[in-house]
Image 1 (cartoon, helix red, strand yellow):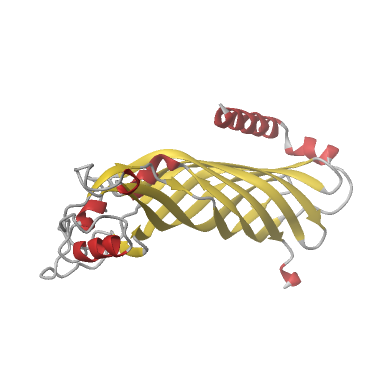
Image 2: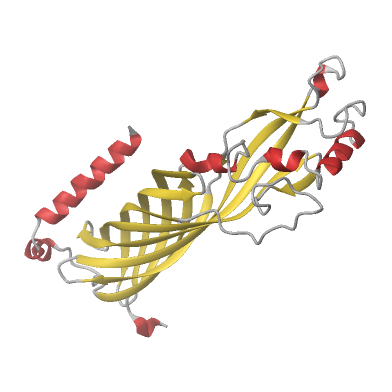
Length: 300
């Protein structure tokens, strides 16, 4: 309901802006600092909240591109995992090696991340214009699972029946926004800045790890779907992300500085498709940002 309300407010604001002619805005434009016109360059920084609808790519469950079980009891890593668990007294040494299973997986979720970018815009005297914006964010994902130390409850005390373990992932997400803009004067030095248009994004998976008994293991599939072994050479990692397309809408309050540009605080809502191997879905992204627009290039 919150998303629908945001979209409705945005659409109403756009309709009001489009319904007024350029002459109307010129007549009622407040006196004060001169509004930026022509070509501007801008930088922005803020926070990004990503939709969790594709986050389970990082959960490590069977059937995913990267799985916990592929590494857990592998020839290459299984013995080390077992030794660490028994050394730390997390499981009983009476349990035979390569007899660990996952009792339960949890859903993965994205943490809030920082997003930085730059762009160009061109503003006409009417208040309309266009922009091209390029942003990048490095997202982190967290999840967890419980190791089932044995199928025989009598071998271990109940407190050691399960061993909780963590999963983490990192990815780079690039957003490219191409859209139209409209500046609506509100006060002597303040405008409402509305943007809307096309979003193109690219996701690149950087790492995918599990942590067991204080040691970190990569579960990125560089083994062509096979269990890691001493006799098999790993493949070169191929990105498990991809391109996605959608739309964005932005509303910001812009403070005009004559001869320089504007300083803005705003909010961008994305409705866009995110592609990860085996997980492709259209969802929401939310971005709160601060933006510094430079219109007078002599300022440099």
